[in-house]
Length: 287
Image (cartoon, rainbow, N blue to C red; front, side):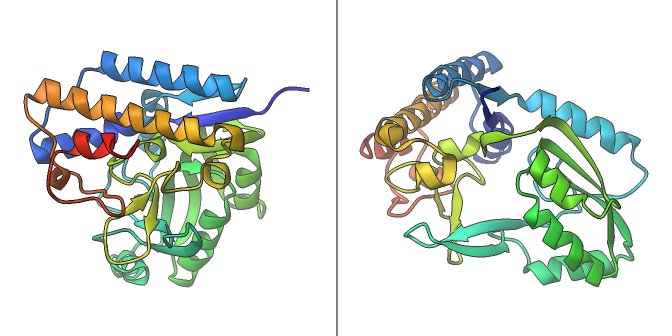
């Protein structure tokens, strides 16, 4: 019997590119990110015998290709691989105890129903949805029904990673076409790379409240077992590893940019993070 795969979709380089430009930092070259991901993959392979990290390029190339070939307006649920003027900004929010509080609009975006009303006001009647991952398919399934109530039909869903159970859930009525860069019949889990780092835009689960705070998928903030299927014996060591990887990343950004990354430069904050001081020192105090 084949061992299930543990999948991580790469995205931190794309996310940090926009951040670096806004904050006047220089990102390390691709070779640094390749080495950082190599270390991450080696570590994860010690926990999961069948580990796979899917590259940003593989996902981007596929999505860009299918979108180019599509004659229908594409609306994105995730601005990472396909930035668009047409989007639906949603995030899963939790409280400080990590308890799920449902779906909300992303920080600094319009209320969910207002976003849909804006699409309707433009006379849009048919769209393709774009997302980074189809996991359970429940979110997209619900969104398809809600959009239908606004007179908007979803004919196709494009995604980077697709899990077969989620694909089946969305396409069970046979009317929606699904197209993914990679499809897995079953997985242990599928997690976005950003959720294993601190301070990356969109990383972690969003904390309830009108803020841009997150709980990453590791201790002492998030729940590695429930959120990322990390076995209990590895939780503490894994969490320390993630923080150390984040430190390496921002130390290299400082080195290349020849200036400190301040806590105030980090838009995606965690609870109790100060606005003062340098970010790497803050990270080192967590371990």
